[in-house]
Length: 82
Image (cartoon, rainbow, N blue to C red; front, side):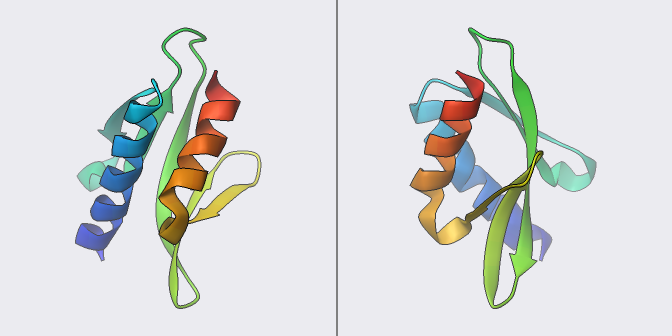
């Protein structure tokens, strides 16, 4: 499960970086993705967690996205952090 989680977070990291956001792995076993807007200083933590038969990204204030649509998740994080 940890390997799958990290793979999903790495995919999101690539997408947010392509949109100008910065990121780093955090938490025990790099189980979280810290994402921040370099210009705004805003930051948040993202987790990838099993949900039903798939996986979802979750972030504070009720943020949720299916890992199958990583681009949409990255777009929403970009909107929140820029």
